[in-house]
Every structure is written in structure tokens, then in C-alpha cells.
Length: 264
Image 1 (cartoon, one colour):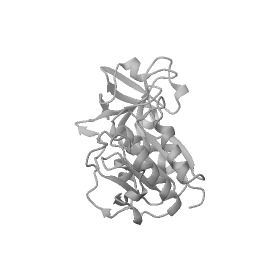
Image 2: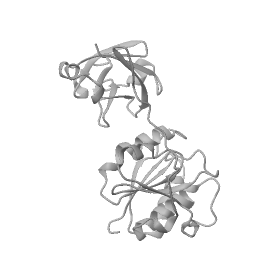
Image 3: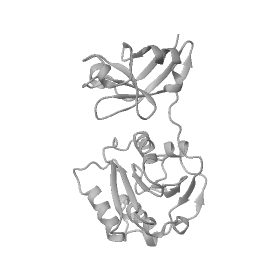
Image 4: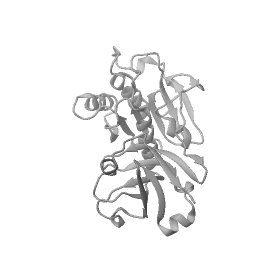
């Protein structure tokens, strides 16, 4: 595979040796690999946050990119390591649902249980499969260019559905899916859930944290200082933001908070 690109998404943080060690394993096997960090600040053990992170990023990479996603609260248990072939990219992860958004977006996938342990580091630690399984498999895949040698195809892989907004009379009820670095609240209603007249007028009737938000803006700079507003985020979801501030702090809410969007 020419110009092999391997991305890393983990909940490891950057204060320890973990991410650097994974990169060392990859480069020892394939010194020509390009390694790209997507995010190492996924909320610890949070499969939904990991799924949203890789789901938002992977389509912007070239074909045949290999994405390693390690959010693995079940490390050392019987959960399977898997390699997934998408439409034109690869994914390596624990079989715990962290690739659920990828499964939702891809029209064609093949999932294989990684059992060919001669590709692993030896011995395999019970606590660091990112180093001993996922990183070396990614490196070998970048050299081999095909997944069939890593294990048999499976169909019972783990996946979960993203929380969907639900109708409630003349409103829809949703939730805050995640809070980003800036304190923006990503909710699960999307552009398709908003009446066109509401979008055209730049007005919403959105209830969250005991407060009502009425302004819908196109860019952050249109928001009034210190006042929460709604905006259509780059991932396609309706977000609640504060211009140069934190909506999470201003509203006093976090992930999981209920959101009600009045449609009338």
C-alpha cells in the first residue's frame, strides 16, 4: 500500500507513554507509515463519544486509510479484536460498539475477528491491547493491503444505535450527545428535523437546562455575547453554543441533558 496512513483515536490522553508506544510499534513494523492523531481525549471508557469521534472524522481521509480506534473498557476480557473493511477504508478496534457510527454510515462493510496472533506483539499484555494487538495489526495491514489473513469474517459484531429524537405532540425531544472542547453542546436533532421556515427565519424554540433558546445562527460570530444560541454544526447535528464562551457552563448542563425543540 503506497503512502500508508494510520490514524489513532483513543481515550488514552497524552500525559502517559501509551500513545507514543503505539506509534513506536507501528513505525518499527512499517517505518514509512504516516501516523495521524485524530483524538486522544475521548471521554474515558465512553463508547458513544468514541463512536461519534471517528464517525465525524474518517470520511475526510484518503482511500485505504487505516483507522485504529481504542476505547476499550473490556480490555483483557473475551471481547474480540476486529478489523473492518468499509467502502474504501479500514478500521481496527475492539468489538464493543465503538465503530457503531461507522457501521451506520457505510453501505458495505466486512468485519473479521482478528485471530492471527503471529501479527501481535509477544507476550500480549492483559491491559494494553492498543500496543500489543491493534497497533501491530494496523502496521501489518498497511504493508499487506488486505484483511483476509487476519481472521474469519463474522456477522454478530457488536453495534448500538445512536439516540434518536422522538416526536412529542408539536415538539421533538432529544438529548445532548456530547460536549466538545469549547463547551458546545451537540444534540441529536439534525437539519432534517427542522422546518425550513424555522431555518429561513433564524428562529427556534429550544428548551434545555430550564432555559429557552430562540436564536438560530449561521456562524458563531452572529451570536450575542454570553447568550446561548442554536447553530447547525459541521457534523450535521443541531448544536447549542455561546460566542467565545461555553454553552455547557452557561446553561449548567452536560451530556445526556434533555432537549425539547418546539416545531409549531
